[in-house]
Image (cartoon, rainbow, N blue to C red):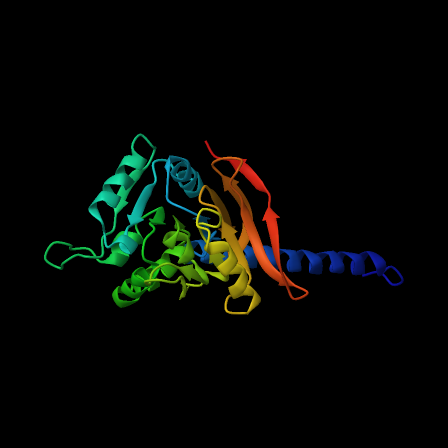
Length: 273
């Protein structure tokens, strides 16, 4: 080192130090990325498609699209109708000629005939569609059979969850149901979406006024109301978009503002074909 000429050495030292820091950061990033890939911690999108009424070909095409897979495996859960045979036949008919592989998961089964668990079957699917019917009975059976826990695992795994009527109500905190004699009553859902929900919003006259009353009195939290031929997509528990089969069907967010019920019409982004 020459006296009085230290600047070039200092500059090179600084550059060397920065280079070491850069290489250390790069090495750490590569190691972290490799560990993430080995542990399978890739980003997962949790998706729910809730529609107000029964399934149809338009809704099923949309479920297929949401899986982002070719020829996806889609399983129907007809628990709310007690695994009704006619309902299952109608499901297979709705899936005819669609680019998917339809399955049905019955709950009225026996160990002698069914050699795979509910978890093994459901977690092998690309999407799970829940049918309508008696919501209270369905929720009780799911809890007894552990299917509620399996559906949570499916949701966290990124398997698309869908359904209408009881099959949409189940994903929310709760809502009104016709599962008991005489009057509509409140039922608790799985709570994947932390709001209330009202299916059949305009097709059944008692639904809307009772939904308003329950939200206004605090029995239900603010939430989403859906007409029979409309639906809402949620991703990672957040509202993403509304779709419908026709221009007359809509979705809404119902809340309380200044002590009064507020019904917000949500824009339908797409008319399903």
